[in-house]
Amino acid sequence: MSDPITAATIATLLLMKFTEGTAGEAGKKLVTSLWDKIAARFQGNKQVERTLATIETEKTPESAQPLVVYLGEEMKYAPDFAEEIRQLAIALQNSKPLGKMEMATDLKVRGSLEAKDMTQKSAEPSDMTMLKAVEAENITLGNLTQEQ
Image 1: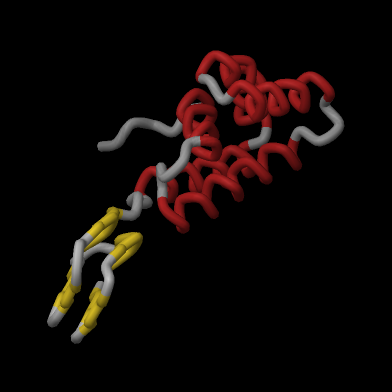
Image 2: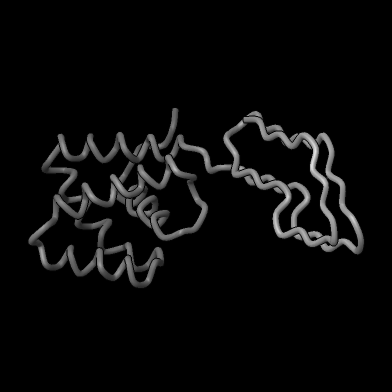
């Protein structure tokens, strides 16, 4: 059985909005949806709006602590809202960050470079880079393949 999704869990997940490369594209969309849903719910509540602005500025777990209190109370009294954000949080926890694969990058070659039959394969979705930032007098390319 997995841990329950609490206000503290959700506040921590919201910090992923500001952490580079945490959750890949799908994760970024989920974090943004979660953030937007919470911001919309508390629109007009100046204390919570200030807290969200502080989280955006400071990007620390400490800055998210007041949100835990506000969110916890709201989740108690608005079960539909609580379920919506719990489902987003579960989806976010289950999303995987993209892997990163680099092949033949940042090369400086004196003379000629010949790249023949290079293949990059990944079983999982990955951010793949091949032959980037390559310097050579002459470059000859063959079959270059990336597969996911």
